[in-house]
Length: 332
Image (cartoon, rainbow, N blue to C red; front, side, top):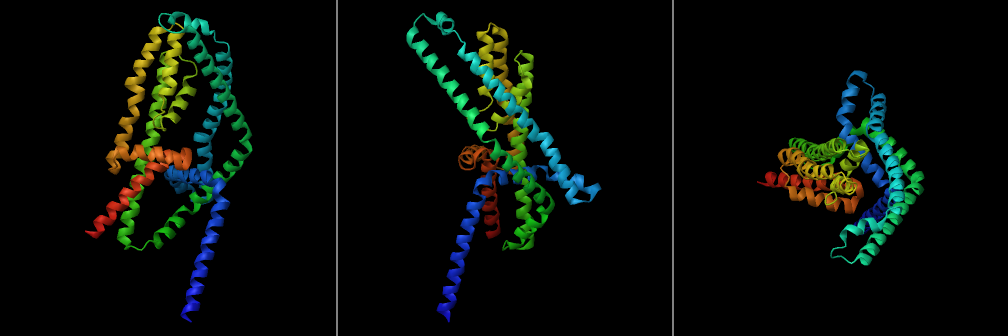
């Protein structure tokens, strides 16, 4: 009888693992959309609660919140992407018409002109090819992006509406005392909001200061490039300098030396530092997370989860330290 029971138990475990694996295969193509839906729901849930107070209808409140998300985030992202495609085409046409001899002429003092011209030509050709390749990939991926968007919207709707039920179900399965579970979830919420809002407000600050700098120093499309800098500020190592440094150099090459140097100084002193101040204020002071964990979390998060790993990576490491600290306190 015992052997038969053990056999049945192992059979159920194997069957369950197979089903879990098959479920993973089914949702694997849309994991990114599900993660983005979860993150956006988490960010905008306070707004959903605020809307739901007077309305007292979870379905209507969820729809209104999703419309706000589309207006605040998704439409601007589409606009920026569309404008970047146009700018990429203009940039491609611009670099194809560059007179390399005009660039190399002032540098003939000690440089090999032929090799320099060859290097610049190769760089221009390589850049042009990459631009065309990336644009083609983006256009071909549009149908899949539309499907991901639909999944994103429906997932957010049900997370807004049924999120508390899901959280309570998870909470009920944790084998801890009620007060310990409440403390665990309270700390989770505190660290989560510190990491998420720290990154978002830091990126927003860099985008705004970058746009102001471009406006002051006469760079075209300051709002567009401010949005691009806000996105790049979320990515370590890269960052907004990939925008403002070339912009400053282009100003100098075009004869606007004072504006170019001014933008370089402004970028070093303001754009490159403001996000660190804001993130330090939000993250390290509100969650006691060491900056090295944030940097490691962003880098590894991008590698594992893609773009959403910018926030998800640091959040996971921060939560790991929180859980470790929690169990150490419980043990003592």
